[in-house]
Length: 239
Ligand code: PEP
Image 1: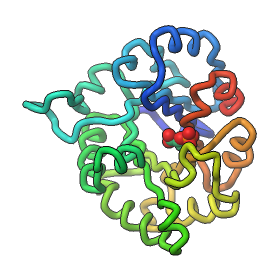
Image 2 (image 1 turned 60 degrees about the vertical axis):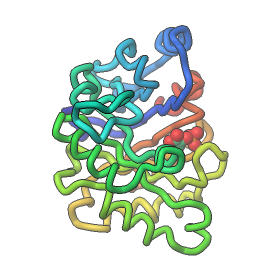
Image 3 (image 1 turned 180 degrees about the vertical axis):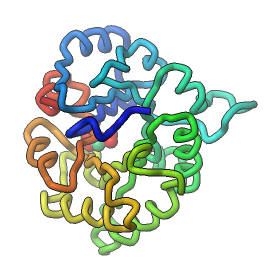
């Protein structure tokens, strides 16, 4: 398992349903890694094998995993298959999966558990919708997501948490720096066990705001969607 404590910050590129072979080749030629950071590229699964991950600073991550271990589940990829292909990280419970694929906290819990068993680090995504925020439900929603989607065996060494307000994903909107700080502190204080967990922020991170977000005391890195598809932009973010 990757030793997370070795890195001062963690940056995850979530390419979502984007990219092709020539995009990937060009991206890797231009990618400039920063040796203080752990950089993880989550490409669509079919390209994971051709990503040049697993050097000291660059890793591959999947965007999802099956909750089943094996059997008659057409189209699925199991945690052990990811491990067999040198994948060290996997996003779980991204809001797009919760929204479009009806993923529940229970699914996220089971998937994360299967990943941990295979020594793959789940990046468990949590976050409130705009409506929930406007109704002052952020704390309650995050608390439920944390209680139900993070498995008991999760520790700060084998699991990452990503706080991604749903309303900030792909919209260009972000919470204020104070709000991000407060929510990250809240997450780390839900239980003494979470104090040492690394918590990443995701939602409209770009080169113009990444530095100030990443410098916040309870932020341990960023999860970047749209801006990670432009390699120059991503290079600036991780630099
Ligand atoms: C994401 O996909 O997790 C994400 C944060 O997207 P964006 O950076 O485009 O808001």
